[in-house]
Length: 262
Image (cartoon, rainbow, N blue to C red; front, side, top):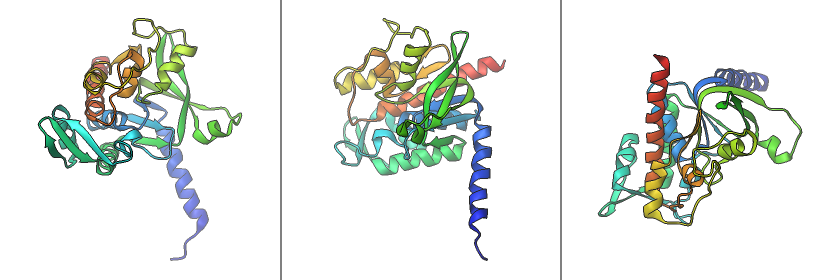
């Protein structure tokens, strides 16, 4: 068969267009394809919800690829090993309560299993604003990351979502947009993002799960973003809390979506 470059181009354009149009009205939109965001998306998609994820970078995985100081091993505590087992990620016991996994296997497996469960991931897309109606977040304003990087004056597009999850990690990008532009008070002691504290793995791993919750109507924080919003410490190259946070937020959202459907 003789290959036709125009046919190849049409296939890509038509397929992507259809996928993007389908993503403009969903149950949950997740921002940030680190481990917390992808795990959250996996559990939601597995439950049959319409969920999309927008990642500004070319690659997914956040900081998990590099483990600690570019040694591509990750540590999880015993509580989070169940999530590794759910994804079929191989792990080995290092010491009582500590398990090791290969970071490359972990990221690639979480991504693959999430996509196969039905999560739609759009990379190279930046969330530059949110839609707010009646003091509730109900959608995102999107543009190509390349547009942002080049400082081009190109208008974005908008999508609607029943709930939005900020899984952007340390920057807490969606929460800071809300704080800066919407006039909505966040569910923190000051009504604003508090910023993350210095590293303390033990406390950080506990608070990252507890803080992964709704931070204003329609918007949830998940993963390291949650500690950045509520002032918890960073936890360094241990990733169990990230996995558990994604699982927790997905469970909370499934309850909310089920209640709204009744």
